[in-house]
Length: 64
Image 1: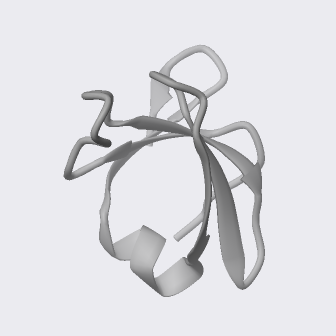
Image 2 (image 1 turned 90 degrees about the horizontal axis):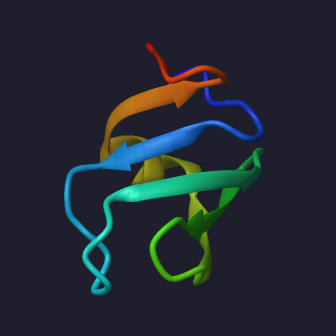
């Protein structure tokens, strides 16, 4: 899966704050993601993050 810095990931399940969108801050073996609802940051293994992605939004809300 092609995930890049500053992509917005829409996940299958919402964060406890209610938002499903996450900003990608770091890629590699792990993803560092920031919740766009409350600003909470998490570090997830790539395999777990990719399994939960519903869609990827890039630049001008271009859907991938």
